[in-house]
Image (tube, rainbow, N blue to C red; front, side, top):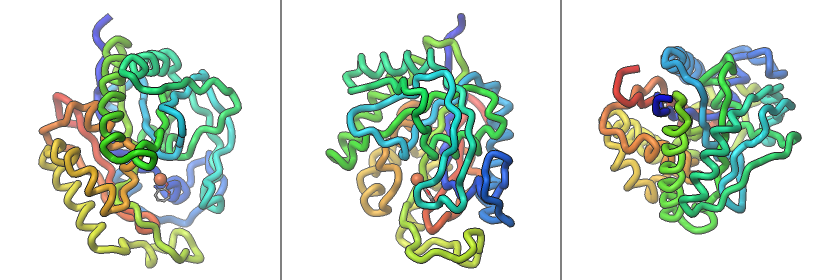
Length: 296
Ligand code: 2X7
Ligand code: FE2
């Protein structure tokens, strides 16, 4: 068996609005349109990633929040209805998720060897979080490969960003080791927005794009700084400035998803392909991919 490898790592944000606006059959509410720049960018990224012949997708989600340690989905399949807790009017999504349990278990064991507190989620009735569902749907709309979903243990909130980064680094070492031993071709998704200030008054029509924009110029400047670093392959700088970014841009990267992705990719010094940037309810979202050893 040849060694497994990471074939790409993507920044894959999860605003459920992007699914709502695309009207896939799985989602009950129907939209007229909306958030085209982000959706069309995602479509281009999904097409490029499909060409990479992926066996499994591994996704790290801020919305699976586990308060004791890092958890991994550990049941072969999950079917249910996912309803966004804040936006039930636009996300009621019927999912049918297949899990690569063998890889999840290998990652769990490797993470435990790294000293992390870990757990396998074995409850067949567990409701898969919308961060996992939205990012996987948008990156791979056909749902034709199994996934591994990793929770966020919220160490930024419990301790601080430095502890989060230390744990992200350990989890990344474990992720890489498990993937190499698996012989599989794996796509990584960091399911996260960048800046994360939400608007405070809601439009009557969710897809009313006259209301969609950044609400704070400083947060916009932070997003542009990160995107510039992605394009220049300056991912060490992204890592090092994470404490300031998380605090000043109230970034959703506090979950550890972006830190984990950069560390899994061993801090690329080559350019990411940035497919799109746009706001959703005022939060900053970039769709981007790094492909080790070659262009997308
Ligand atoms: O979870 C989210 C998010 N991160 C950004 C925007 C809109 C909704 O949900
Ligand atoms: Fe989110």
